[in-house]
Image (cartoon, rainbow, N blue to C red; front, side, top):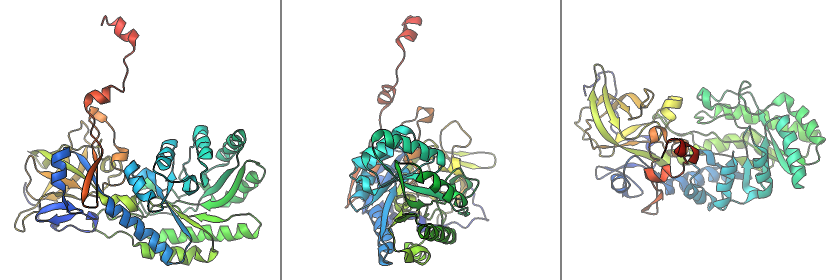
Length: 443
């Protein structure tokens, strides 16, 4: 690899590394050498630091409590729904933000009681509504009149009354990637603020729904607190107006979306976030719900991959690794930046050079990074793709009939495989070839 004169080569790990750091020249977390784990479970693999996840939860919830806020933190399972992760957070008092019947089942299985579960999502099915009612959830975040009408019918058939929060769209630019912003007027999510009274008037005529709360969620991976401030103030003003008009609202759901450090800059400070919440809506004196996901788990995970080949092209050096876009789709889907470093600590005098880090999948989009500085690497070397604890394994696929990567949890100075890598026979055993097809083929 030839060095580039236009690149500042960062040799030290930065805020993106979370709990991971070099010890005795090897990348470690929780006192355990990451390469020793990879050597036993194989690559690619996901490794999460459970103590870091617990610490992130404690920091977030503690910051809110320190401001005197009556806050319930409901972990957004979409970020990482593994039962071990959800159970860890449940035991610290976390509730759950779910968007499917499967996530609801996982939250319940992890020990989260219904009264700490929020069911969000713009397209709930009748079966999902029924499951939420059976579980006795805290609230359904309703996003349209149409949904409200169906929920009322399902609740009537169940002989229940559905607790509802109207998810409102404050039309605030979250200043994040276009595919993960959710609070603008052109997004599919939420009810426009100006339509809130119309929807409430409809709800008043329905016997089996009860509107108890207002909710919002303006996007994911927010690193600036300013959009939050504007959105919270807008929602708070409407809350006060509606209560003065006699609507029996008793809590506010402020959503999630707080980001992490992907590209060198520090993650948003939970203390500053809590101060903003207190300034914007703290004087309302009502319970508040929060639904962080990535902020709790993102930096606590890495994807470990092995170098297969170093290929010199006409204009680029390609480092071909055994992980692929089916394992971590974010770079292909969002042009997401993930720091990538060797598991061995580079020597101070090594010359770093730009490379394309790519996977083996038959797609040009199967690329983790372009023009990324790396120290010299060779086939067999291990690399860590950082900030992979959120939206990594949960968004993975088996494209090219590739096996799902195993997942490992490090906690209390020990590590455990929390999802094994299946073999190809196990994967194919889930499929069926019709008997008629076999008969026609003469098999």
